[in-house]
Amino acid sequence: MDMKRLNHWLALVANLGVIAGVVFLAYELQQNNALLVEELRYSMLQNQKDWTQFIAGNTDISNLLYVNGTQNLSDLEKDRRFGILVSNMFTWQW
Image 1 (cartoon, rainbow, N blue to C red):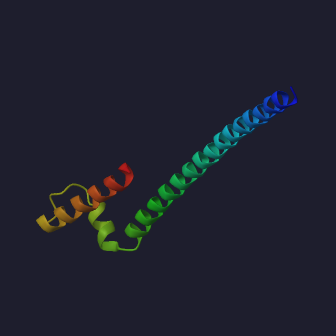
Image 2: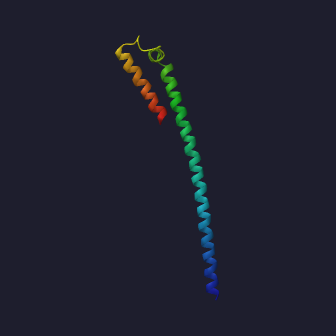
Image 3: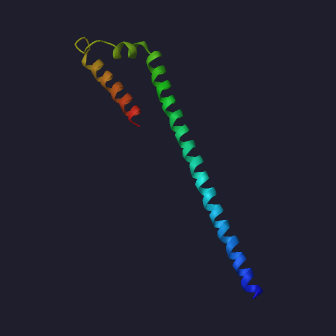
């Protein structure tokens, strides 16, 4: 009879350990998700900073981007402007 009772208590302790492990795992997943969100925010901030520095650091690019219309641009300038804007769109898309 003692052995049966001991097995019962050991099974109970083991089940409590499993429940505690699942709770701990859920807490770790929640922390990991919060960390991933913060990493995403930081990455977006870095992209914004890089784009601002790219424009501010090169007056040719700034002038190319802020020209009104495309009638005053050569074909090469139009292609450069299109490439820069598409690159920015891809950066913001991700």
